[in-house]
Image (cartoon, rainbow, N blue to C red):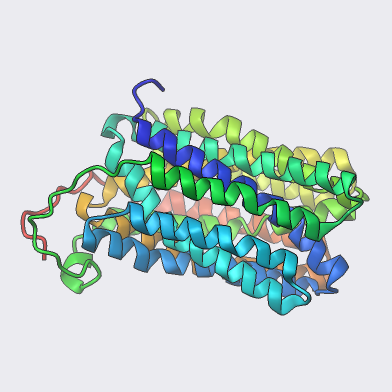
Length: 397
């Protein structure tokens, strides 16, 4: 860990602060929509799917712009700033329209910052430590993802389930994240003498190899198998947990996620990526089955822990796999396209999860997730693994 550059640590702590801000809201938002605003389960799934897919679609353009200009930090700062300014809108929302507006603005900010931030990690991390660097950034990010819900629980208990008051407090760490990135991150210098061209024209996209598109396909299937975590929150509510304590479910999941992300990221530098991805799907199948069959908090906790282990095994790994197979000068674009495809998969998965929940009950949602996991396992077993990392050409057309 001492060899990991300072910039990776800064980006990790920036992610942590923004996740504290976001998860204070997101751990309560499904209940706020259902209990306070009277939103249907189908609408929850559709809103979550649209929000997440919007973020992933925007990443294509922000990633391409970061490649074109040779600058990534400015776009990342803009994205984090939009996320910070969206937080007060949740507290001000009087109906579902306000929530949708705030959620989409928040996710647009995430989309703008996501690909440039991941490309920055790849830019500053030595190749032999890339898995560990992505794992560390993901671990710090996930620390925020459990601190946020924990703060939400405390404030909900103190303020007698006052959702809006918690939403107001959530804005503070978001603005701290923007300040830390702006003043604390030094972007590495890139060769500005090369002629700038559009990264998403056919000639440049043609430099993304079959190995890259294999990673994109695997990421999409994995996203289909793992729908929005809003359904974990709503499943917890079904077990009879009081509303103020429901965010503890996300705390438990993210503690496991944070604790496992760096070790599994480091392991990915020395282990077959295919095998690690396959093992993660087995873990997710077990999580889905437990969550589908369990109606008490003990089984719920087991399922949530398994879900967190799966996240720790895969998220940093997939990011490192993209960096390994994409040309250095197209990293932003490569992350953007990867997330665009995953975004559409997330929209389909979350919308389908909401329909199944309303039509056949909550168990059907998780059984369907297990079924998609089996499809993903089949994809891993029948398709070629990733090839060697391509070398950028001298012609930057």
